[in-house]
Amino acid sequence: MDPIIKLEGISKQFGKVNALENISFELYPGEVHCLLGDNGAGKSTLIKILSGVHRPTRGQFLFEGKPVQLDSPRQALDLGIATVFQDLAMLSLMSITRNFFLGREPKKRLGPVQLFDSTYAAKVTEEELRKIGIKIRDADQPVGTLSGGERQAVAIARAVYFGAKVLILDEPTSALGVKEAAVVLKYIVQSKLKGIGVIFITHNVHHAWAVGDTFTVLNRGRSYGTFKREQTHRENLLQMMAGGEELDELAVELDLISKREPGQAGEMEHRVAEELD
Amino acid sequence: MNFKKLLTRPEFGAFIAAVGIFVFFAAVAGEGFLSISGTINYLEVAAQVGILAVSVSLLMIAGEFDLSVGSTIGASGMIIALAVTQFGWPLWLSIILAFLFSLLVGYVNGWLVVATRLPSFIITLASMFLLRGLTIGFTLLITNVTRASGLGTYAEGDFLAPLFLGRPLGLPISIWWWIGLSVILGWMLFRTPFGNWVFAAGGDPLAARNVGVPVARVKISLFMLTAVSATLLAVIQVLDTGSADVLRGEQKELEAIASAVIGGCLLSGGYGSVYGAAIGALILGMVQEGIVFTHISTDWFRAVLGGMLLAAVLLNNYLRQRALRSR
Image 1 (cartoon, rainbow over the protein chains, first blue to last red):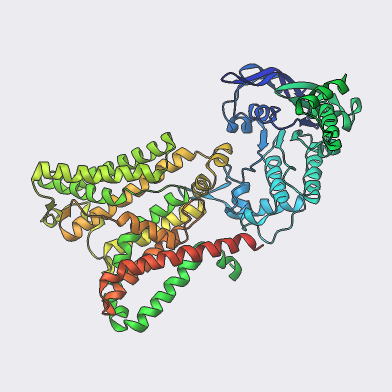
Image 2 (image 1 turned 30 degrees about the horizontal axis):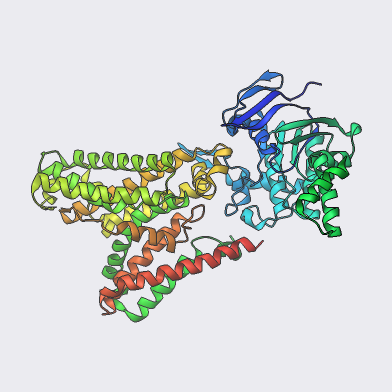
C-alpha cells in the first residue's frame, strides 16, 4: 500500500530559528500515526505544515504520491486533509448544526436566492451525533453547552462526514478528564477503521499507546525516528520524549537535593557529573 | 418552537422589555400615546434609528463597529443638496451619487479594518471625524452656509423620489423601510449561508477562515451595508424636511449601537439578532416619544436611555449565560 502523505526532508525556519530540521514522515490509510514530543519539540510547526498554514522552507510534501504546495487550510481541506485544531475551531455561541456545516452550508433555492437548508442540516447533524453516541435534545443548542470531549467528537465527526482522507488531531485529549478522553480515543479508532489516516498529536504517551500503530518522536525540531508498535514499548517512547539523558540527570539531581547534604551548588553540579560517569 | 428555546433567543430580553415599556406608557401617558397619531409618531422615531440599527447589528455580530454612520448621514445629505442646488443635477442622479459615495466610504472603512487589523472602533472613529470635518469644510467652501433648504421642490416629478418620500397606506415611508430591512436582513442572517458566515466572522475569525469562510469579504460588505443604510436615512430626511444640514446624524451611530445592544448583540461579536436590533429601535422610539406624553421634560431622555442600556446589557449577559448552561 502506498502512503497517503509522505514528507521528505522537511525543514522550517522562522528567521534564524530552526523549528524543524530534516523531518521525514509517512502516513498510510487506516493507520493511527502518533506524533509525540514535549512542549517546543516542533509538533505544532509540523501540523501547521501538514494542514496548509505554513509552507516548509525545504523538503517535499507528497499527497497520494504527487508533490503538493499548500497555501491555505482550505486548500488542504479540499484535498481531504482535515485538521481539528487544539482551540477546536468551534464557535461556542453558535448552534451545533451551524458549526457542523460552517463553510459548507447545504443550500436550497428559493427563486434567485440561495438559502441555508436548515432542516437538512439539522437532520444530518443529529444523525452524525447519534452515530458517535452523543445525546442531545436539539442540534440547535449552542456548542457551548457541550463538554470538551463532546466538542472534540463533533469536530472529528464533521471532518469524517465531509470525506476527510487524513485527519490531523492536535492534542485532542490533553484538556480532558479520563472518561472524556476515552470517548475521543474510541472515536479515533472508529475513524481509522473507516480507512482514514489519522495523525494524532499528543504529549500523553498513555493515550498514544492506547490507539497508535506508528509513533514518531520529535525533540527540539528533530526526529528521533519512526517506530512501529512491535518495535518499541511505552517506556521507551516516554524516555525519548523527555530527551532520555536529561531525565537521568534530573533524577540524580533530585536525589541529591532530597538528601539535603550541606555544600555549595557548584559542588553539587560536580557531583552530578561524577555520578553520571 | 417551545418556550425554553424562545428563552435562549438573543432578542428575548428586548421583546419582554418592549412589551413592558409599551404597557408602562399606555398606563401613564394614556390616550395620547395610544392614539393613531401617537403611535405613528413613535414608530417614525423608531424607524429612523431602526434603519441604521438593523445593519449596524449585522456588523456587530460580525465583530466590528461603525462609528461613522452619523457622519455619513450628514455627508450624504449635503452631497445631494450641493449636487442639486449648486451643480444643477437632477435629484435622482444626486441620490445615486450619494449612494455610490457611501459604498466607497463603507469599502474604505472595511478595507482599512481588514488590512490593518486595527480595531474598527479606532478606524471608524477617525472616519467619523474626517467625514464630518470634510462635510463642513467643503460645504462652507462652496456655499458659505452650513445648511441647504428648499429642496422639496426638486422632488416633484422625479422618478426616484417616491421611493423615499410620502406616506404609503398612511404610514411614513421610513417605517416601511425599517420593517422591510428588518425582515430582509433578519432573514439573511438566520436563513442564508452568508448569515452563518456573519456569525462565524465575529465569533472566531481564525477558525472561520480555516474552514473556508471569506471573513474579509463578509466584513467589508457589511461596512458597505451600514454606510448605505446611513445614506438611505439621509435621503429620507432630506426629502421629508426639504433641507440638509452638515451636522445632521450626529450621535445617530451611538443610538444605533445602543439599539443593537438592547436587542441582544454582543459587543465582542458572534452573537445577536437583527430582529432584536429592530425591537431595540422600537424601544428607543417608544421611550423618546412616550416621555413627551407623560409631560416629563424630554431632557430626561438620554438619562433614561443610558439606564436602559445598562439594564439591557446586564439582562442579556445573564440570559446568554443561561443559554450556554441549559441543555
